[in-house]
Length: 343
Image (tube, rainbow, N blue to C red; front, side):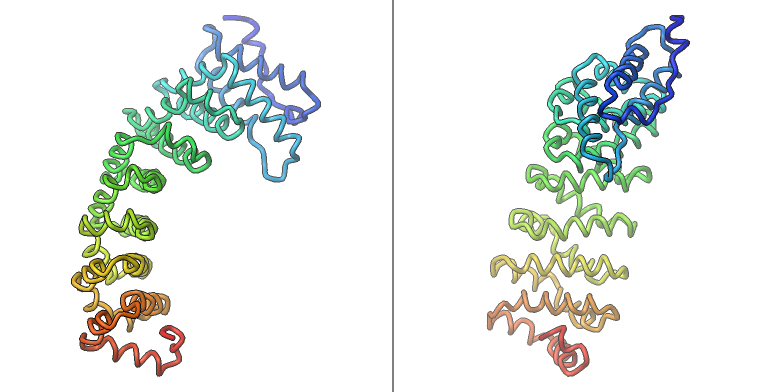
């Protein structure tokens, strides 16, 4: 084995973050480069080098701008050097420790440098997406976690990482007992992109029927956000979302019920045809129960929804007044200490 590799010390000193100490930083990068590119390096040495490289880009929010600038300079150097291709190649390893360390380096580089296009061109983002399809469970976990972080911090990378295949895989994972929460995080980001609405919304509606309050809560929160968008709202209605939201409005979990009512309120800003569809969905049967709900925010949101349903239309007012107890409940609230709910 190369004696130089044997004698390498990986001890990193605080001087590395010192913008005035260029020699020390360059020696450290050179050391890491030597290890990652040498055929004589063993797995332990490469793993250690990856971990040290990732730690170089760890900087707190309180760090001075000079330190951040220096780290950005180091990141740019790594991206433009043979180090990055070597790191990307290690994403294909069969050991989870090596995969995780390589993925963390890529994630740190994507955060530290503005030269993102270069990282994408070399296949780093694609390599991390491929981790999601790995046979190694831990690699899939790592891949989904880091993918979510990247897509959250760097929205412009979504066009390189998100695609129909990936979204389908996330929905498949959600239906399994492993990684459901992680996959839902990625799906939530994907649902912010209009090109995935048509396929994602029907899947979300199916997911909401899963007997898992955690999944139901995340799905209904996503639906609540989507209902505020006119384009999404119509897709939700066309795919049977109204009956789902009406059912969810009576959910035992108060948070789920609240988001369902909020979603119905958002949908009520549409055409008269949509309002009629909401009335026909059976929501008015649930309204008297919701006006008696023990949670104040649910009573308040129900009153807001009623206001949206009416919207100054005599015909709509008639639809509400002809129900048995709705107006009675509203009048009761007006005469109580909670009059502000319906003012």
